Length: 215
Image (tube, rainbow, N blue to C red):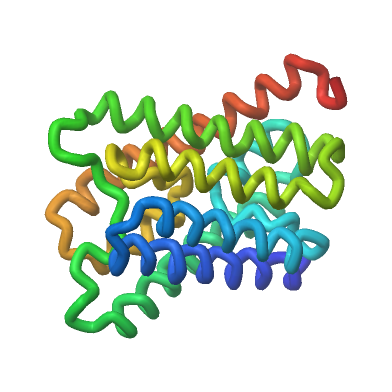
């Protein structure tokens, strides 16, 4: 197993949660929060893309596994490091924010948004993200512009879904903050994000295969 790739996934996911959840906690500007997440993905795709592919998201890894773009053993290692990175990122954020940590940017359904609605929205938004990854980075059609397309997709998904579900699109993004958050339903709703997001990644992989890989 490529230890450099595992380290890249851990550091990348740590940064995504530290910056993304941090922005969600301290800023009331949804656009700023969306771009905080999107810019992390964009920057690390350029920085670590040649090392690990910069999944930094178990839903992305599962989606690529279903599409045959990563081996099962490597996928397991990626996911473990992503989850550890998410937990470490949230713990560091909680320490830095101290008494201001509060909900710690936890992704939870908004008032009036039901379980089914949350599941459907997270699944759809993650589908859109992994769909972009497949049709830009995996296909190679976007070349060096793929990270920009992926980062912008994450940003516009958060702009739409953030007020409703927190727009996680990433089990590691939900897990880390949930463990340190004072939000009353952060842990009880965690299962939704851990199931819906990977399912969205799987659906994107299935569509890519249906369309014929290189189209």
